[in-house]
Amino acid sequence: MFVYLFLAGAGLLVFALFVLAPRFVEPVLTGDGAVDTPIPGSTPAGETRPPSAAARPAEPPPFEALRREQARTEAQDELARFVEREIELREAMQVETWAAEAYEAAKNLAHAGDESFVDERYTAAIDNYRRAADALEALIAQGHGRFETALANALKKIDARDVEAAEGWLADARLIKPAHPDLIGAEARAGSLPEVVTLFRDAHNRELSGEWDDALATYARIRSLDPATPGLDQAMSRARQQRTAQRLQSLLSAGFAQLAGGELRQAESSFRNALSIDPDNGAALGGLQQIAEQGLVRRVENLRRQAEKAESGEDWPAAAQAYEAILALDGNIQFARGGITRARLQRETLAALRDIAARAEALSSDRLYARALDTLARARELDPRGPVLARQIDDADALLSRYANPVPVILKSDNATNVMLSNVGPLGKFAELRLNLRPGAYTLIGSRDGCRDVRATITVHTGMAPVDIRCREVLAR
Image (cartoon, rainbow, N blue to C red; front, side):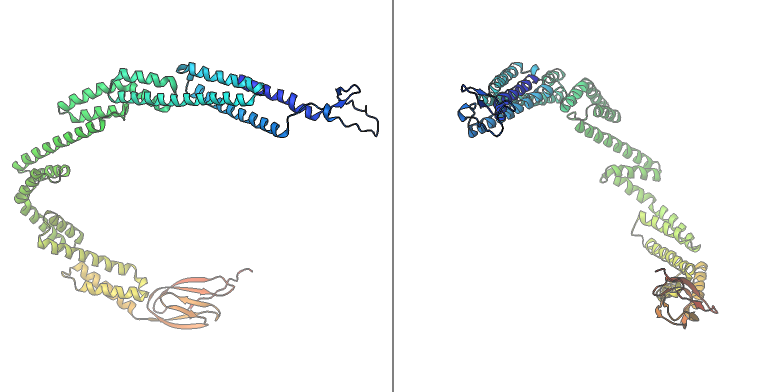
């Protein structure tokens, strides 16, 4: 195609020499009427000698010149289209290997276009270039269609496990687009096809022998070679179902054997594992029913003794766990339902009483103090009241009594700082302020224009010293 570009450049050069150059040289008329080029300095000073219009070279009229230039540009556009299509065919589709004759004919049309272009017969050049480009576009469409057909047929043969036929179609596709990703993928599948056929045969034999794990492992090997193998998912699903059925039958057989031998716990485990595979399996459900009939009462009584022992020691978490175990066997056993409610209430109340003691300073809050009183009241209603609960009730009662009565507190300030007290609210500005506050923790916040805010946490108690709160640090302006 460098030939075409060279010829196009030559055409441009000829056009420049014979059409454009004369426009920039002003001819002169000699004494015998011949046209000559003026010699610099030959015209006398002060004398102008305009060339005769009849002596100028013939030029096309402006409109005709414009039409010729447009035709030339259109010819170049068609040539560019031809070059683009030729590059695609040569580099991406190897056109010489499958359509050499048609390709050569298109190039001949382009050569004819080059000759017309050089002779400035632009209309003929346009026609030849256009026909050449159209011919290449038809070849491109033909190549795409042939490639897609060959690739599709190759994939069908691969899916049918016909190695020889697949190779034939792949060879046809390879003539056109040897580096196409889809073709490379199809070639990889075809390369693994002999091994896939062998592995399918082996997996089928494993299934016939009931070796389901080995069959699934073989199918997994096929998937690693060619995940797109038709029928692979169905075969693996069938093998998994058969393996599951085999395991289910094994669990049922073991469960009934254990039940007959009095191994109730082992039998229950086998039946429950069977139900995890098939939740509606009647045999497994029947086995569990037999276990319940033989061992439920004994197990419930053992758990009840554990729960009562835990209650007597006020080990309420252990008692709740025992009652939960009973209800897991039979959710309708009334003593267990009442026991777990009792155990949870005792456990929660003890935790709440311990929290009151741990957060005594928070009792300065009226809301938290009222909540603590409510907790104490509910604790007093609990039955039974063991030693641990009784001691917690007494400790909480004493603590709340100490925090019930307000104590006098003196606050000092500079009569310019606005003071805020948590759990109380704004106190305003003052020099000295006397308050009666419930013992506990409070936060004082002081603010003043032009000064940095101050914050202090105080613990109110009987006999405490006055507290000073004022803004001292002046902010820089």
